[in-house]
Amino acid sequence: MTPNAIEIHDLHRSFGAVRAVEGLSLTIGKGESVAVLGPNGAGKSATIAMLLGLLAPDAGSVAVWGMPPGEAVARGHIAAMLQEGGLMPGVKVAELVGFVRGLYPDPLPLDRVLEAAGLTALAGRHVDKLSGGQTQRVRFALALAGNPSILVLDEPTAGMDVESRRAFWTSMRAEAAAGRTVLFATHYLEEADDNAGRIVVVDRGRIVADGPATEIKAAAGGRTIRFSLAGGPSAGLEALPPA
Image (cartoon, rainbow, N blue to C red):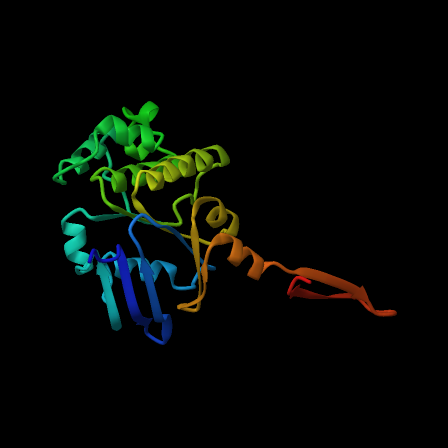
């Protein structure tokens, strides 16, 4: 039987007294597009770091195509676009992407990567002369360059303007439609709803909801009732379940 793309079981990770991930379990099948939704500090980035083999769990297990994360990364099966990480200064965009392509056995064509990341017009620009949003697009190109079967994206549109964000998600949906498994972390429900077939909601290191976008939106829906007491300030009851 073909293993799932990602299998995480009872994952735990603490940083001192802070429990970043606490008993998280998640299975993602081949070709799924999954958004991990939660506020800052919910444990999304720590989970992704363990999925990529960048951070060792305190307890629990992580498998990518049935193998340890480090092995999957070394074989080029999984690649990531992280929130942070410097780019090599003094080189041009096309040079950097081309260098990274050369590290993999079956990379995508350079022109294809640049086009998918919206970098064709910036191919000759030095990476240390890019805006924040353009730098994010370079990070996406580097993740895509090796032609991985799994793409992992941690808050991928941070720093992008509206037009760049729209173009980025158009490219991401195309990659998912081509059969890549896509996992991305965000704290925007609208972004998750528009670009994922499944949403996993994480809070305080635990999964609190997991399902199609329609179900998650229905569960999150609510109304606010405001009222005023005689001679007093207005008050409100928020997030009541929909009628």
